[in-house]
Image 1: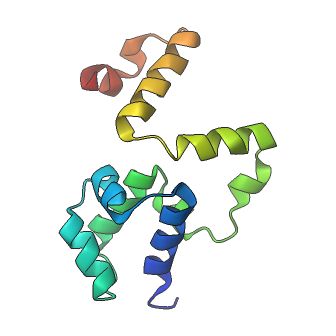
Image 2: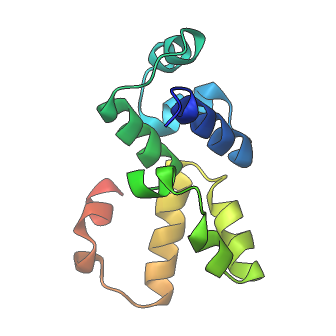
Length: 119
């Protein structure tokens, strides 16, 4: 794997979502200076920072490295549109949408205690 792959992939994911570096730092709960220095100095982020970045994007580490993008190919156009919209939401907005969907599906809050605690 090329050394610049990770930084290029993060940039690609940011651009897909139309996120600034500041927005990524906020969503990933990583300091802006850490991200900025990583990119400015062309450093590969630590594994813990990369995991936080993936969490900020709402993807797994496996999805980060999946160049085939096979999941997206399996989605219908409406599902792809919904996922694209989802990627533009903040963490709080994602929590609200998830809670709304759980309400529609009549899923009790105790099934998802981590979200009930965050509310």
